[in-house]
Amino acid sequence: MQYAILLVCLGNICRSPLAEAAFRKAAMEAGLEAVIDSAGTGAWHVGNPPDRRSIAKAAENGIAIGDYRARQAVVEDFDRFTHIFAMDEKNLADLQVLRPSRARAELALLMDCVPGREGEEIADPYYGGADGFEASWRDVSVAASAFFERIR
Ligand code: 4NP
Image (tube, rainbow, N blue to C red; front, side, top):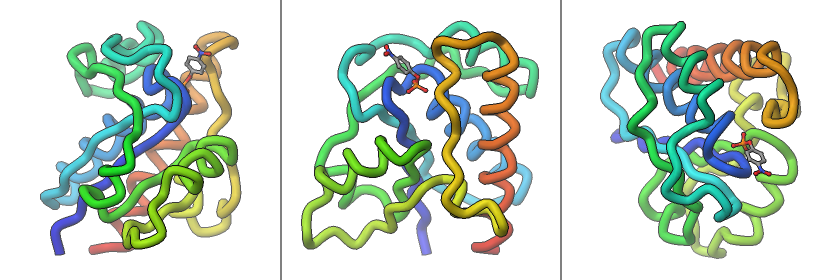
């Protein structure tokens, strides 16, 4: 099966670019081919690079994300991707509204990938300090590893 994974947050500049980076890293480490992308439910930052704090956090972990550009999630994403993962409950609710009834893509919270952490949200670090970005990175990394562990 060809896996295609879309990571979704609100702005596509803080959490979901980190999640995209973590999934790329985990796929590489697992030796698995997968299509990996990220998007936001909102349009405010479309075309912008990730937040510089996310760029720094990803770089610290060996992944360059400075050339990522924000885009908004669209209805066609439900055809292009096999798995769509939301960072928080609001993102998930917005995606459920966007989701066509015929859609077969799995739609879930990202932390549902992690046994024992189902239902947890990835907190929005945008208005906080650097520790929030560290927490986001830890969460998305654990989720990415758990996902590839599950499909292996
Ligand atoms: P993200 O963080 O959803 O993790 O990309 C945010 C980025 C920008 C805004 C909110 C959250 N904003 O309100 O502009």
